[in-house]
Length: 304
Image (spheres, rainbow, N blue to C red):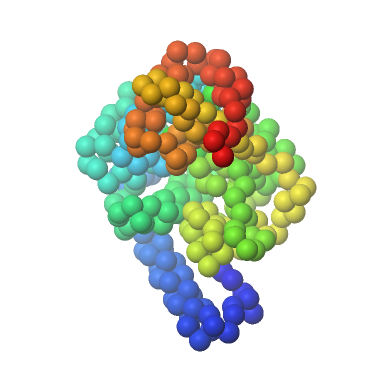
């Protein structure tokens, strides 16, 4: 949240500070109510996570796209074989939930069907994601207490071997930094971040949005954790825009590359996330070991 002294006289006249704090109080209430809901088989899921001996346990929030979870699982078997993947299903489509549960059972992945989200619709996507992450942290991560945990978007695909535990050497967290507009606040994008559990377990982590500071999902952790860290002394993820040729049109399509992970969704592609996912998967299956080199060799910017 913004400090009260940061508001302009015009914002005070418009009661902006009051409106933003009331909205925040509402969000906290919704989070607390939702966090008390139980998921089917929750105790068994916690026990399976606690039994893992891996240095890092990865969690992904699935949402209505079974093919994304399938692709992520494939790539993690190839490039992160020692990192267990916990699939937390936030899908609003019952058919998608059924398909994701089935593929997790087939692959032996830990699967947790989250309670129905209190937020629906495209404009509530960030809030739905944040509430889901807060539920996961309160109900799975904290009681299972893994040595470290990673949060990965369901359409963030690794393209090379990655040691997530090594990213945490000497620091409590690692990931892709995003910054607020017009302020010094920053946060780690919860689609690609890793936390040392011992370093953060005493903190009330909150993966909700902080709209007054223009911080998206995960932004509430600015006040909880990130503002106490010296970003200049931390190692954080690289990021760049890369391009793949659309096989139908030949046009170069942009994607985000965070370290050696390609983010399929939210990269401004045409045809929607499912179509872009299929195009990336085709390129991956044609040359899984060599795709990362092709992407890094592609122009970072086209037609600026």
